[in-house]
Image 1: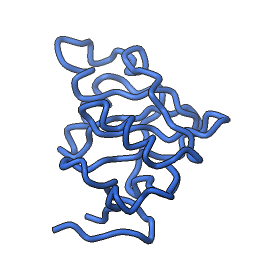
Image 2: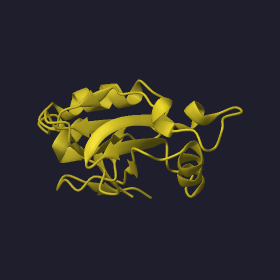
Image 3: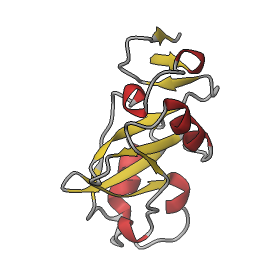
Image 4: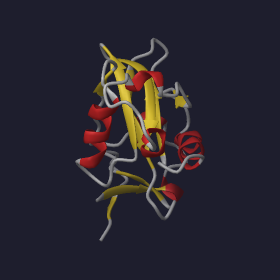
Length: 139
């Protein structure tokens, strides 16, 4: 996996360390849709919902625990933050990401456009999946 070590990201912005593999679900997704999305990969720690490219909310696997109606709107359960603007320091994104078990935070422009996601490695030492030139391949 490509990663940008935290100690090499001091002068980078959130936009510089966006995870290169990013997808969002539509804001009208159901609980069943999001559960299926999570089930497709164990690496998916947070689901992002978007309405015509605008950030609508996010959910973790834990948000979908328990007996929930599969046809229920996932947006009803989604939180709307935290988020970070793309021009913010990458370190701020790191701090927000490690504040939750998913190690992720949405990168959202001032107009509400969902730009991407910052992901932090499980060892908390790097941003994962980045496209920034300062990267290393992890074994």
